[in-house]
Length: 202
Length: 333
Image (cartoon, rainbow over all chains, first blue to last red; front, side):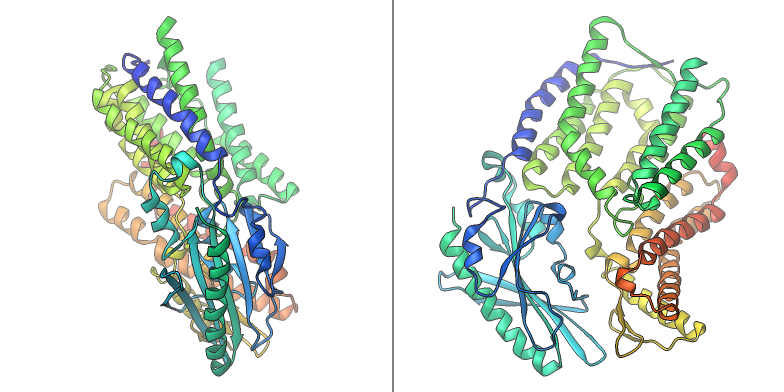
């Protein structure tokens, strides 16, 4: 027989009774700077994209048609309540970009906020592919969602979970086409951020 | 005896259900899931013979103590339920991510029971248990807002360690050190770690080499295998063998702990990386060759997932061959 001690358990029980309501409050409550994670109405105003239902892991997506046409830019705004599902944005595009190099371009938006736009690039025979994306945690751009989640620490506790957003543009083409598309992608992301920032803020 | 039989039956049914839900039986397809679950339960029932003189029995407290223990366990289960449900969701999602998650807890449970059966000492509750237990609760509360899942899982492991110190004492918690440490393999790791560990790159090279042996010309370009003008097969982080590697590391650590020879233990711990890459290269080469021969669309064939399951079992089988099986049987007695 293995003896079990319960002498100190009342204190542990007290701690758990304090923690449990906090946990449930956080899990069940969300705070969205755009009003609602499922609607995010302002983003439907972004030129060239429309809402597409994507139920996996509470992903809400507004996208252009995901064509693999060389030389044509595809773009999407994807929002999720679970940040981990956006960890590898290149894999969310239909013609997925399997990373072989990554770089970052910083753009200063008119509001003076740095926009860290990431570029995942790869090449197969004759084709260059890329995915450019900007992470947004709640209402501010983030270099990395995981780091931002951890850095925010206590912040969600009084408000509830906050959705994350990725603004992404991707394309495939010859190296020349890809260079042109990358410039277009950067422009599109900056413009979309401006719209987002004007309508989604705490 | 009846209680022991009921426990064995309960364990077998729980494992069968977990196996049926896991991606290792394809998870979402009813027939293979049911067949896999029933087979797993029957195999476990056949293997878990009565243990003779060493049954595991906890001295259940009576009266108020019993009530406190039950209330603490129930409150902990309720507080951690959102994390556990999220883990189940992640562990049943796909063979390409955390494929071992549904079954590994059963190995940990078996090991913990075996260690407790052999442990001695009284239940001198250790107040040190409050530190990891409270830290664990704090991490789970924090992560309920952050939503990383990794932080909450580490929190639950920390809580389990503290709970053991508080209820079973320090001597028995020392006996449980290995099973508690193995719980860390349940922390879901992001597949973005695959690239820094070289999985896509080495899988592409291995596959290209194997395709040459099969008589298929393929040129490796970055993470792509260019087979023809129409077909460039990309080995992403997900299907690079990373999930197989993590599952292999978890099982190899479990097996290494039951190995008397240090050299064999080191071999077990070093084996998952090359085995995962080799099995994934073989899987990818076989998949490309099959799809080419029968004109199948790789992206829309169930063969992709099925070959992933096969690659994982191949690695598990190889690890079991390397393992000290006699030491394992003794360790779990």
